[in-house]
Length: 289
Image (cartoon, rainbow, N blue to C red; front, top):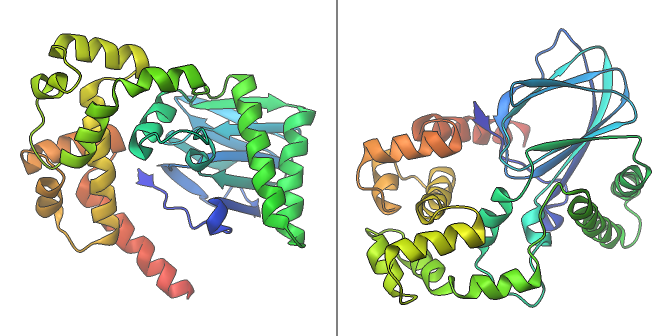
C-alpha cells in the first residue's frame, strides 16, 4: 500500500484537478491513501472504487467523495472518462477566530469525517464541482478566488450532508480546557509522555483526563500522541536524510520496533516502505522535470 504525495496543480489553494481516460486492461492505481479529500466523477463509462471491502461503481451522474486517509483502489470497469480533484480541507475548516493547534485540528477532523459518500444526480454538488472545473480550465482573472469560494461552498455542503461534522463554536470553548495538554504534547513529543504528568496540567487525575479527552474529541490521549509523532516522522522521512532509527528517536518513540509497529498500525505500511516510496516518487518527479 502507498501513501500518495499530492502535487497540487494550484499549490496555494491545496487544490489538484485532472481528467483522464482509463482502460480496463491498464492498471490505474493500486491500493493507496492520501491526506486530501478526493472527489471523483465520470462523464463516460464505469469506474470501480474498491473501498472498505466494498466495490462502488461510479457512472455518469454519480459523484464519489473519499475522506482523507481512507484506503482505496481505483480500476476501470469499462473504457471511461474520469475527472477527479483532491483538496486539503484542513486549511478551510478552521474557525477564523480560533487559534486551535493545527495538529489537533487535523486529528479532530480525521475522527469526524466519514470514509466516503456517494451522491447521485445531486445538482447542488454538481454545480459546485462544475464551477471549480471551469475556473481551473479557463484561468481567467481572479479564477483562484472563485475556486477558493467554491471550496468553502463544498465544506458547507459536506457539513450539511453529514459527510463531515462541523467543529461548532461552543466546542472550541470546551477544547480550551485541553489546550495546556495539547500544547505540551506538541512541544514535548520527543520526550517520554506520561498520562499522570499530562493530567496535572489541567489539575485532574489521568482517568478524568482520558474521559474528558475522549468525550470532547472522540479519540484518546494516546491516539493523539501517536498522531503528532507520526506526522513529524512522515515529515522527516519525506524531507530529511534521517534513517529509520534516527527518525524513531527524534519523534519520541522508545524503540525502532515500537516505531515500526505504530507506524504500520496508523499509516498502513512500514517506515522503510514509506521512505522507499518517497524516494521513488522524488525520482519520478525529477524525471518529469
